[in-house]
Length: 122
Image (cartoon, rainbow, N blue to C red; front, top):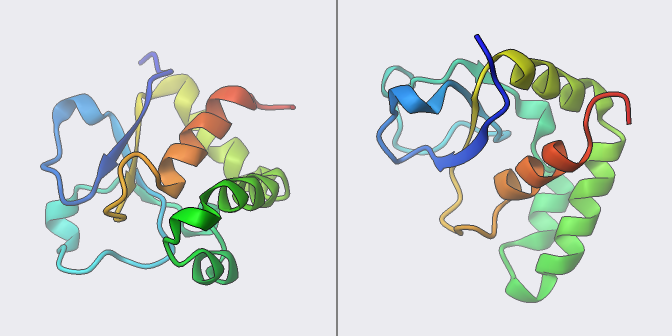
């Protein structure tokens, strides 16, 4: 199986066969979703923004640019989780599943861009 496509999708959208491997990239399970209906293949909690960063951001638009920078710094220091996703992306299409209402301004989008710009070993 060839991989390489990395998408983002809100957990409240219906899963699709085109999603490939569905990876939940949230620290907490999203409200109102049963695990069976979510069709999650992997829940990678530790790749989500830290609780402190998430609380500081509070979805305040004025903090968005700094939130992105701080989250990328967290990812720089979390190579084990980043490399796990990059390895999966070599053999599977990935859908990074998130719960935030903000589209495209959410951490899954930042993570997707980070993965595409920071291949394994860099």
